Image 1 (cartoon, rainbow, N blue to C red):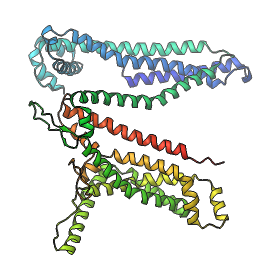
Image 2 (tube, rainbow, N blue to C red; image 1 turned 180 degrees about the vertical axis):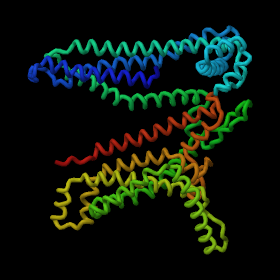
Image 3 (cartoon, rainbow, N blue to C red; image 1 turned 60 degrees about the horizontal axis):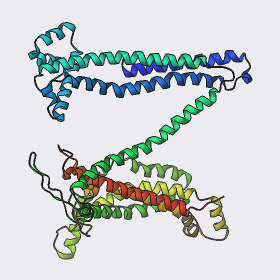
Image 4 (cartoon, one colour; image 1 turned 90 degrees about the vertical axis):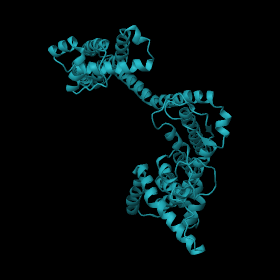
Length: 494
């Protein structure tokens, strides 16, 4: 029985348990609902929960533990000369055994017997069943594949029987526990509280797992490259070696990448902040209800456009436009029509990234400005202030902490952008102040270092994790500072 069908069976048992529990609670009440501690639905939910939850937990444990046990058993059956091979070679052999096992499940009994009698034809027979093999399998692979196939089938049958048995046992014992004074509501709400707690812990545990994985590999990198050379180096030259050749030391200076990241992010914020704030002020204070209902969704459509599309727009339209317009300006001024703005430049990437960030600034700022109490507006206008004076001297100061927090969060979004920078600013790790020249960012180099058929053993690859943990710390600090600003300076209104 497949996992999906098994879950469907368990869900069916849970539904039947719910109906049976509700019916039993109603029967025990004898038409007097006041005699029950909880409503009949809670008794049914209690039976359903204990029918489904233990069975699902058993299924999850089985799905995780069974492949580990079966794989260990099959590997222990390898010949001694195979066990002496490197782990990577054994993994490749096990993958081929898994493919053979899947092919065996497609053969009839007679075909299986013929295959084991003449193993030389295994590759041809399995290829005819849609299971191609990279090479002729060794004799021990056929035996191991048969063992794997038999254990997998037995595991599936035992799993199905055990899960259904646990579901039925849970339904039976929880059904027997139903009584008029039984606190079914407390039990069900306790389970739901545990589920909410588990759901809220997923984000925390995921963050911890991401940090731990990056930090572990970053430590391996810093064991090979001194930290001060990485954090204070001004040259980025990883020097990838050819396949099979020894990699040179290379230079892993973070400063050019960090400078490009901050520079492009700064240009993007110069574009996004004024436009986004002005749009937010207009929509919250001046626009009519009809215009706001149309303009705000249209503006937020920008947030749904994939960043790769922005990258194409920068590469095909904005970059060539800036290059051509600069050539014409230079020609009119000096007679030399050479362009002083390159198609791939800090200005191109920052401008397009700023367009992408406009809906973030506008939407967040609009929500914050709209949350300012109406009494402040009415009081200012009642004292004779104009609408513009009210906005400048009352509304914006009241909303400023939230706006600053929104801008800092937007800046962290800009720092993590990759695709726009790749297509609009290039991959050159340089230190310069000219916005018309190309630069690159930390995220782009992370992609470059992890692209290709590489082993995670050289500094050239491990440096990506050091870059990742550095970028994580920068964005984390920005978000923490934004929350600090909002909490410290937030005005409390009644």
